[in-house]
Image (cartoon, rainbow, N blue to C red):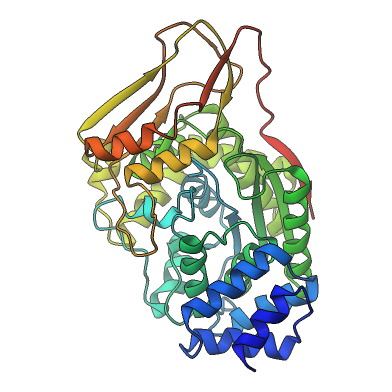
Length: 433
């Protein structure tokens, strides 16, 4: 296998033999293929795509680049959820404890911010002391005990994906169906799951801009799951505007805790509970009506919040920062964007808001950039809302004037106010199994 030949085949849209693709990926994970060659391959894949057979082979090669998990001794059924990435998407943080409180094991392996979208690990690490790494011998014990662990990839678990994931973020090669599919499914299939729920985002703030693109991605991942005997359900959800009010890291933890306490924005609450029900149904232990009742009880009884507190403690976080959310990091500066006229919100662009969040420091421009957990945005309106002149549309929390100016430069056309009423957006756009 010669790396240049693999790159050239993909550049020219020619099929790559599975054995050669496997060797290319495994050699990269071992450091025998340099980043610049993998970056060239990723860009060629973005341009020319892959067949399902190539995508499946790429997924398998990533899995085979390291260890896999074994949950055969767990006393609980293991079901996980993964989002393809969105702006303000903190759903995993309240969702996992809710499902765990219902008796299911949620071995959630999450990622960091990718492009303009936030990452669950970055949000969790805004909790003082919280560690997203767990020793392998303690992982199963934690799942059996409290039902949930929220971690990043270890150096030994799917290492090829970990390296390619970071490279894609820094080289503009994120929005690719085969690269997204193989990245997500290699991690999830390595978890030895009984079922997997996918939240496939659609719209300006997602990597898939249209329902057709999202359906292609969902169909591919459901197919890869089926080829590995893992039941997969995919829900298509709207990402033309941010999810919830908070966009950043620590401020999204605040919103997540509000949901666990029975509050929070309506869209975050609705989607969290809907996905929790789907995970319980996917586990096979609950009917839909039984799952809805179990989810409601987990929240209203405080059981889900208790599980989250145990999760924070088990992974080294300071529970005081959850009991008193004012202890979470926050930047000192504040700037308010207001409506210039009366009317109705017809545009609240998720992509531009996500990009502004990155420019504030809540995300990464380069793969080794530090993340500022205390900066972000609070979005005060949704599409369809009636507003009056001078009403706040968004509040920016920032660290310094330079980052604020950079963020404001991409927010000039983010909010559009129309004179005629505008319909609100549907949150759920489809489902595939």
